[in-house]
Image 1 (cartoon, rainbow, N blue to C red):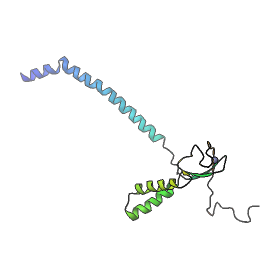
Image 2: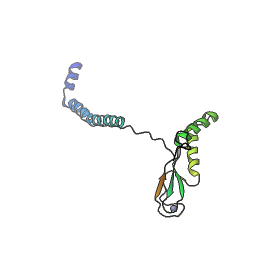
Image 3: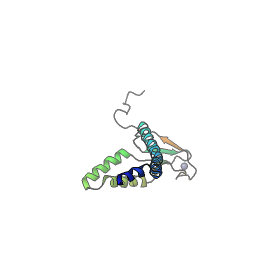
Length: 145
Ligand SMILES: [Zn+2]
């Protein structure tokens, strides 16, 4: 008797409506999953190029005020690692402190300021390429005419 009732209930319209609704509600979820999968796949394909941050000097085009833009990320990271392992501090904390300190120096900026600190005008910064002072990059005496 009981089994018969269950079979009947299974084939009643309410149950099928429930199954139908459950499937319908899953379609957006499947869509979301597919979208996520594509996003992850694309993210893997476009690997962001790791550009080591280096400080660079720039000159104001009007008054020649020299500023330093950015900081040597690799250098500070190594420094922070050394300090962190020695003092037991978290490397990330040390590094952020070092970055803050290096940017607090006079004429040091994280990015090029809009107005020149020297003349106060809207500045046009001319970047200066870093000079390679290592032995290989230095022209030898007597070689250059
Ligand atoms: Zn200036």
